[in-house]
Image 1: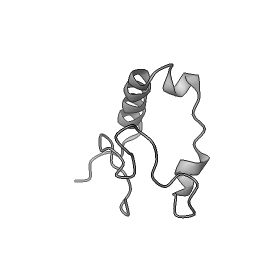
Image 2: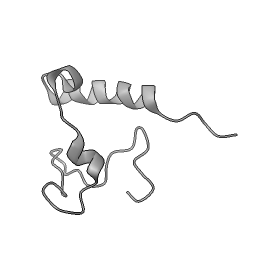
Image 3: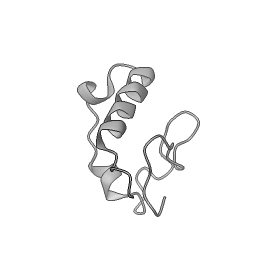
Image 4: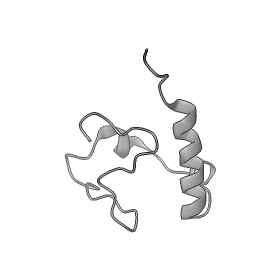
Length: 66
């Protein structure tokens, strides 16, 4: 995603089962490689992870311009 991944937009590199198509490849963005998932961040299930990551995106999205 050349312009970055906006909040609430699913990464285009995720498969239907939430695996990264770029995992282990040199073109994988550094921010993805540096992310260290934890139970505190992701919870104990895919559902919890989706909820928690949505909250993080909301809390860190840039303010609207204009």
